[in-house]
Image (cartoon, rainbow, N blue to C red):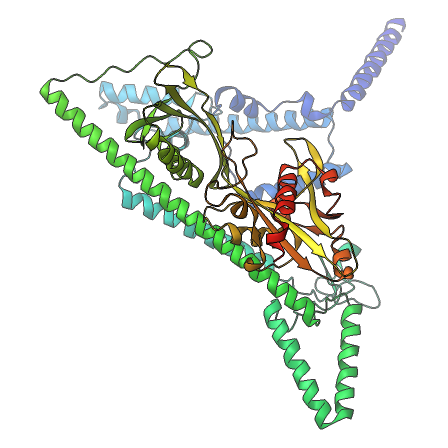
Length: 639
């Protein structure tokens, strides 16, 4: 009895332990505990094997799997899976036993005499087939078609990469001739245009308004009966996705937009109104009132009303000036382009000739001169000047040397002040050619105002023939200028003159008082230049016959002007004077007036000073020279 009790208690304990372990196994997900052998074999031995399935089938399968995962009835524990596996194995074993029994019965029925005529090869074949049936059916051979497809894809990818890096022989369809390249380029352009056009058409399409029918009882949409989210239903037809329709589009402005046509329209309206006033005053008043209301409404909406003839005329005048200026600049640009082209053609022809000469010399056996070694930076210095041209002074050929190009040296030789200097020097040297000896002219610096030369600096190497010593020959060349002494006379008032205040950086001074002046334009017309400068700097229009040339009155043809710095510069000042009778109010308006060409950086302010005290106001050489000559020649000027 005791033994039976012990056995019962042991079996109960074991059953409890088994129950505990089973409960623990239930906590482990079945997919981590029980592995599928087929998947394991595929992942281990068949790395390149891909399981292919249609995309739609995959999507449906994933949806079903997600739903099944959330279903509590479909969640299986480890115990359930193991019991299913055991049951499946048992069924497979029973089916296998039945097949073996059936095969044995079939083999017993077969006549043994049928195997007597078999050859050795046939017997071997049967043995091989019998052994092959015993091999495990779970091994899956790799499909050849998949491997070939992968190989084909690999080769395609390699070819793509080779074409991308332009490997030799990679792109057989690459254009070789010029025509093929041009056609390929044109095709690319057309494709790009088509793509842009398609994108524009796609962007300009306005989304159509969705019609949503709502069931009043259930508040469900009627097309499929399913409840739709509030975000997907459009309650207002004026609101679209990505766009807000805030009313009507703005209308395009009617009428002309350019100032010239607007001016013509305003003048035509004015003429029409004048005619209407003569014919019917009431209609004219109605028309005026209507125009005023239209103007007020237009201004209220933020529109600019351009109906003032004076302002329109100013705008037209400004635009015309701008057009003229642009035309001049464009003309200069074209001239420069033509000049550069001619220079390039000339250089090319020179190079071709030099190449031909070199070939001829090579045939004759004449060796070309060896190129000099390049100078080391910081040791041998920079560019050395070379002979670029030759000028003649008193029947003597003088070389012009410079580090600048031959093209730039030609510009220097065409510079009007340089030509004038050369002519004047020839006149002086003809009478004194035995005194000086010209060695060379070294062009050291060229400064330009846009395309034109403004200043040049050069050294004339001149020696005294008797002593052999050098004469000072450094020249800062800028040419001549004109200055104007404007004497303003009013009844019962003291005589006054106009001074200009403007920044002068070389002095330095930010508002230096001086006489109005300007550089000569190279035409040689001193009087015309003076009148032009007076108008630009003071705003006063003065006729050429009203100007008096003080330099000519004082020195005649002996000197071209007053020389402020004869030791270092060729600059001369042609001094003019003008006596102008004006009203006191007109003279007072000139005080503090802003003038000058602002576009060219001229910021000029006018200042009026008495003629008697003018010498105290500024140490300007032009002013002091003009005052001296004016006082000395006053009797001749006021005749």
